[in-house]
Length: 95
Image (cartoon, rainbow, N blue to C red):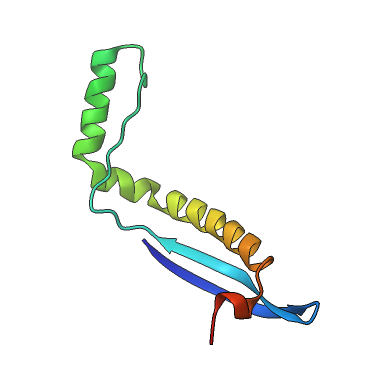
């Protein structure tokens, strides 16, 4: 997983803080395993579908990758801004 963070600093109450404007995530897994339980009412067919998905995980992951990366980027941006709004820039990035 690669993280690309872009942001800016701002002052509040005499202290400098950091705000994340853009948080991009690139996820390149070595392997993906899909497991959808009860995907169909027929357990044998469900098992077969899971097998097909896992045998072709690279193609399946290529289709869902943009959504995963966007979702993780949004989540990490929210978490980072929550942290950076509470802890001053100089307390996180020591010079």
